[in-house]
Length: 114
Image (cartoon, rainbow, N blue to C red; front, side, top):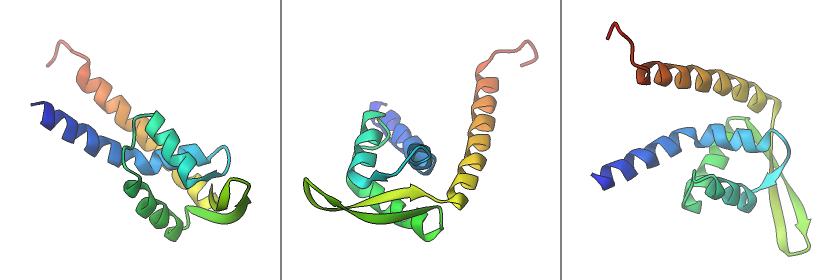
């Protein structure tokens, strides 16, 4: 039973990664290692290999862009930022999230008619 729960949680996390990345980038640019750490801190990602394909997909969709910046701590870093198209997508995901949470809360609330 515990394995089923972990698999379900993993699938749910994967489903909100795009939304989570756009949320992280709405307030400023981040490099991949920073994004990974913030997602790990929020218990939303456990392996780095999950993030890079998603960042590439979001960039190819025009939701993100990136720039290279020199680093004092090693090689240059690729900083990701949200585009105006990404901000529109984020607003749509905000609305979808609110609707989904509302629907789930309705299902969780017992009613006399059920």
